[in-house]
Length: 82
Image (tube, rainbow, N blue to C red; front, side):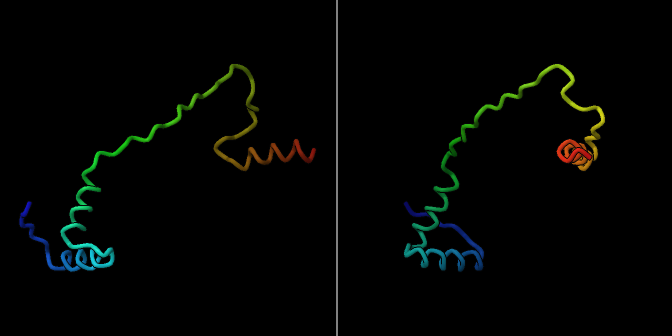
């Protein structure tokens, strides 16, 4: 089927160069671009993530979570017994 599409000069020049690099006619190249961008996309199946929580006193109340270095300092004290 034939149709007419108007492109600005810079875009048309770029499309012609890209089509030539792919050893394709301009028509086939543009058709491929349109098909790639109009094809329905497959949704990516995501693995479900289950957050496990527990009740109790697992977190040291002395840890200041606003200061990540505070966590490291407490860990270092336990490891190096300072």
